[in-house]
Length: 502
Image (cartoon, rainbow, N blue to C red; front, side):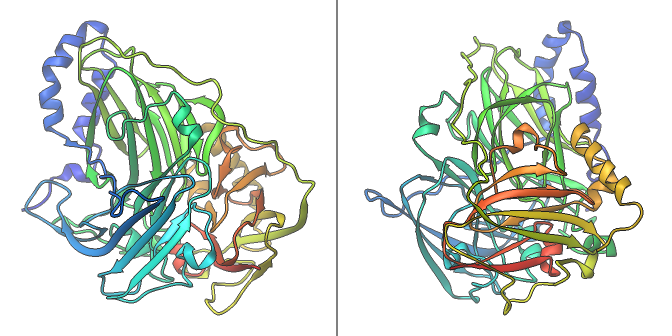
């Protein structure tokens, strides 16, 4: 059986949905009658199950994760493709922990290759971070315990073996990790997991005509990173979500290998960003477009309380329909509120800075580098002192020294940030820069203050061509860590460096 052509072109469903959203109020009755056929064309969004504590009653959450091989059908057909997952065939369960808890994890490698498990965004010691310095072989178990001591946030976990990260993540090894604390529990925010508190792991894939996942099939996949033509959310193709007439909280993870997503609703609906990578912003930021680079996370609130039964809202990017939300009841709307303040974030203070460091990202494809060097597991590139505060300046020069077109590309990047719809040339050359074991503050983009939604805690920041981004970071955990481009194919090809905190 050959998969339908609609997998590779804009779906008729998306066009019809746009026409429906443009319909006058009198069309609501028709919408309700048509809901069953609308849902019939789509797949119910899968919600990652919450992991259960294997040893309840203590201050430690005890879990087991198995990195497994499996087979998954994304299209509801008899065609299954080889995939990887944690405790299942694709992706993994969600881990929810409290600040102040001990997380004790056993990670069992049931793959045919070495792997690691990196706690992306978690502040832990180097040997517990799960970076490329700490692989474990097939059949081995990596056991790790650490205190969760950072604000409420949505983090994630994924493998990080050098040279294999891109393939292992692309094939399905990833999961979300939710940290809660006193602030998050006391805020009037949606918190019913899977009902009005919805995780969305957004990825793009490429499939053969018989439904097999394909990886690195042409030169551009290594030049710009692996990008697909089919979006999946929580491993669901063409997903829909039934929502109540209330405020819905979406916890977003860009789990793609290389694609930057500009997320917006087709009907120009406004929404509010309440958190970035490392936790809550100081107050909600109203917007219509949210840009997420690979590795970045965000939390948003979408108010459906004034919607009517049968209304639809389509979350999308310029390239794809991401998620169709369908209002599924005709009862009274639930009271929805938007907190004025979320948390207190101290103003950036550079008075304690002891050192500035510069990291120049350059090259393309196999020639990518940082400061002119490619990654070497046996080399330490930077040495940092415990509890020191530093400014790291990250420059995306593409080619060291920069061509005459550097100013043009810098301008395209600036336009991209302002417009939020993607300048293809600038996007193709942008690099998301991630630092392990820390959360940092973005203090400048090309000498200007960062956007409001980048003024919270971050661990990954998108750097456009010929742009300079400065971040303020304090190193609170000892050990050996890495910094790298989170385009995973660039990471695998050496756009990464090691640093030790001592």
